[in-house]
Image 1 (tube, each protein chain N blue to C red):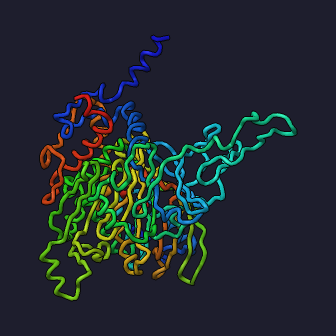
Image 2: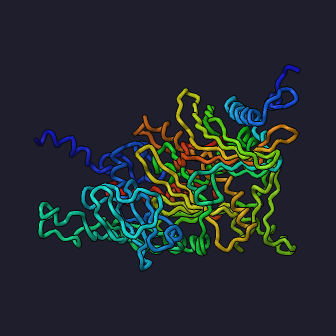
Length: 428
Length: 170
């Protein structure tokens, strides 16, 4: 008996006891096994996605009416997000309390209550069981035991919170309030981009053949931007951008990077009547692709913000989008794109956001390479679990850098957070 | 005289095809052009102000304006072609389109609403083939000097999940 269990016990050894990853090199030399080890992946489901993090679920706008329901995933776990008839938002595991079947099958729906199709167990929009079929049997025969009590059964709830129109959920009671979780710097920048009446302009997804953490690194990596993505250079797009900076959250888990228009250019333009049009010179046959306007007075024209573990907020020119990358297996990730506008947009502004949507997404002219580059790393590393990467551009620490984006500082920030949550810092 | 350019075969003066046949041949020629790697010819199938909009069936049903590719006019298409040929990085691959017989409805004397279904297989450099995209074409085809051109080609994907990335138009 114990002989049979031994290998199982072996499998349950935590990654931090199994994988050699010293604290000295914790942020700069990432062991390749971390991207392809199935047990690490399973441990992440428990410690990260079901741990003390806020997971992005959906927009408030996407469930704006009572009875609106959306399905999503927290890590690999299927989740329902709902708005009840009092306007309260709920999230719960999409798994019937009876036999564990999926309760909601559509991406989006509007329901009076939630009913599992298997045996018609019926839940209210908060996930509380209300009734079951044949509780008292049929014609006096069968039925549940007399002590069966519907109030004792429900869909497993998540705690929910909202910030600037985004709904987050957590399985853990230990997760700090969201503003504390992301910290004041991240919160202020989220507010800049999202604190307005948001409108969904379009959605799609792409399946990328790599571990979810490679995408988490990729979006934090400003070093690669002009090297891999050459669209702007090829079309001689004069972006008038000065090199921007990178801000890490207080705990280093989250970040945003930004680039700004050159201050003196901005000054010149303020003296002209053309203040709010950001014109870009290029050799594009159809420059309306990058027609844009200045929505904010801070001069920031591009930004990417990450919220640990798997949320990205993109604001490139005026193209505002949520990217939610959902793990589908140790070497597969589904990247969901949600393009947004402002309900107050003029027709012209909406048109600019629509044209700019060509820059990103599964066919994005500027960044489509990100769809394949991470799979190149996956394929390159999976047979070398003991080798490591070398992440020292811009130094060896994870600190904000407001003068340069030629740095991997926020990639190191991700690993700082990852090592903490996965327990690697306890053993070194 | 005997060297065909892609669209010559559609010229009514050389071939007395009826309009339906002409439009059907036009759709086939579009697919074969992309399948033969002649993406640089892509924009020549469109009117100068033509629309190419590739989106998902969910976006189409929700009437959402942002899909996956949205080109208004041949200029945006030629920019995309140049980007694919000079700037973008991806593993080389080819498409094989299977297009169904279209249903064609006349809107005006020279403007037709055309619907067909497609499946697109993608074969990578290493020979691996997968079913890449499934959906329907909703077209408006204009006869310009008797030669068909897309005034609109709306490509509606049933397959919302794009595998890896979408480089070439469908």
